[in-house]
Image (cartoon, rainbow, N blue to C red; front, side):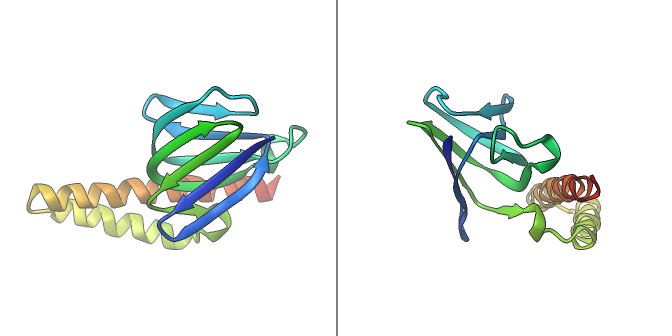
Length: 142
C-alpha cells in the first residue's frame, strides 16, 4: 500500500492508504503504486484516479478533479498539493455545465489578455469537473 495525501487550500481532501493513484502531469498521466521511485513533479488540470485495493475493478475507482499543483513521492507516500480539489461526489454536473457556459461567454467577451487568461482558467477547471462528473456517472451506472 501507498499513503496518499491530497491537500488543497481548503484542507485535506484525502489521507489514506491505497493501492494505486493515477495523476495528470505535464508529461502525461503517471501511475503511482507501492515501491515507486522518489519523484517531484508538477500536476496539471485533470482527474486523479484512486484504486483503494489491488482487487478493485476500474469501475470501483474514486476520482478527484484538480487544478494543478505539486506531486511528491517518497518512502511509499504520495503527497499532492493543489489549489483546488473536488471529489467526484461533490460535483454537481448541471452546475459545472452552467459554470462552463459562463466561462465560455467570458472568453468571448474578453477585452484584454488578463480577462482572456482568467476565462481560459475557468474553462479548464469546468472541463475537468465535467470529466470527473462523467466518470462518476459511468461508475454509478455500472
